[in-house]
Image (tube, helix red, strand yellow):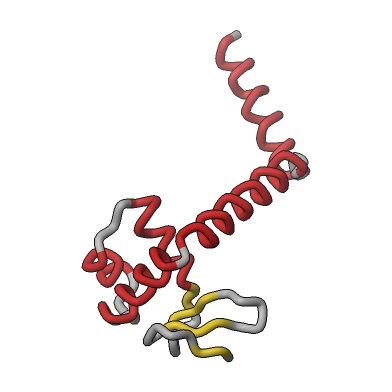
Length: 109
């Protein structure tokens, strides 16, 4: 564990920023703020195990390291999109789709 200059934040061996004693990554709080527009108070409501001090520290860390974290968010999104494109329909999904199409066809007849 590597302490940062910021209270409540530490870096693991890969350089990932975490909130002290929580198992929550800084980027998770940041994504809630960016994606949903949640204020620190709303984030606290949604993550009651985080203190407001921890939430503000996570957001401060983000704004101090915005370029790097934004790049990480973009990279993560690209990886998810690539996995989704590579994912094939599961047998259960195929069976469900076929049954749904068959049911729709019989109703239309």
